Image (tube, rainbow, N blue to C red; front, side, top):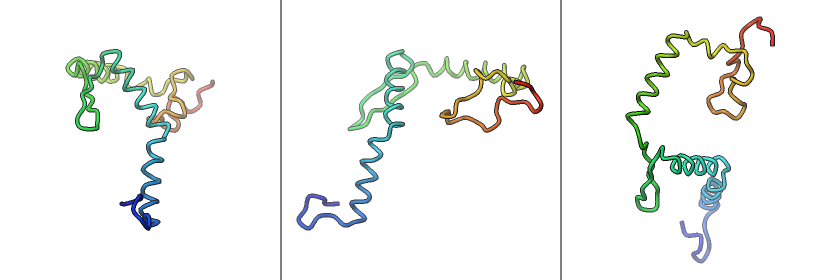
Length: 111
């Protein structure tokens, strides 16, 4: 695409460019960058430049594998009752990407 060439770019090329730059301004992208910076500062991830990109990796992958295994074991022991908890504080928020409609509610349970 040649947006700076005489005659300019086609409408399709400009539309693609607009989508590209809109993606750079996405607030979710900025939140992800802030979250990665936080994880890096806490020592949970490492980062290394690769060209113009930054490659992130888990600092203690083996310890996280242990954590996931422990969480799975605990869920097996509790019969996944945590998903049925009626405590509002335990429910995923509306902005939570993993929120499941109806999660945290039990039919007939009083609030």
